[in-house]
Image (tube, rainbow, N blue to C red):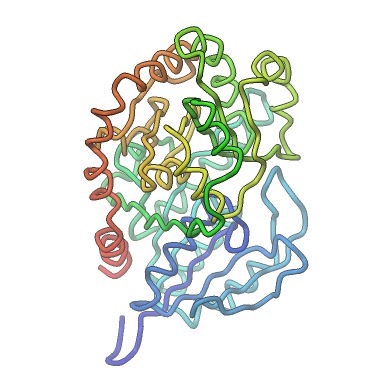
Length: 379
């Protein structure tokens, strides 16, 4: 696939990419940066903001952005990306699809028709609120993934734990390889400690952090319900939240009553840039991740790399880092009582938990993760 003196050409297709800054796009951006010495990388993505250039080179990575036609939830659907894919595929050796992808069947089919090696990295099943329409959408998603994974040479996600419980990955375990994408802390903490957190430290607060989109799957309502129970045993506990409300889902508004009951014990920091996010991680005692679905939580991994243990719900994928390292605690999914108990227990067990930080660092050691990703793609 390679000739002497030439890099293997990799076409990475993803709906979300730089400068779109969610866990999915950040993880894929970190992957491309870590692979650029071994591969000549072109990223084909959606031009989610009309102010962005249609073509750009970022750190030796060629980015092609296709205009979108309309928006579905937080995704922007592009039809022109199909034409851009056909124009680009003849100039590549390997097609790497980041799933979920709105056009995954088309990409997979034409990758094989053009005789290209096809890899698919799956970042989570589609899980929507109950309802007939949502059920139909989920079925269409599952069928699209099934046919695409059937065509793929290899499929992957972050962990085998998630794959064995995924609706769409489970039938393809024979061609599955777990790959933890490199976790890169983009910020350097140049801004120093966050003033809000410094003030809470001076007030002798135990600070628990939460970061993410205010949507149902992230489970912030579970945290809100747990706070009164936590305060009964830990009256000096305080909760600092980084994130933002999302226009496509008014989950925060629907849970406003829960928020009102505990708001004096909450501090909202809004959406943080990379530098402030690193300061946020370093300033809290533990990161709380009460997600209902999460194949791998980048916030959790980043916080743990900053030396901050995690308290996470017991769901496939999300629990992996804690199970493997012991650098945190796992609580029953959807249970505010279990979350409260884990939070209270954490304060007592923190000295013991902190001894496991080296195990966590070893799990997320960058050269090891990069080598695993290179092997998945090249072999």
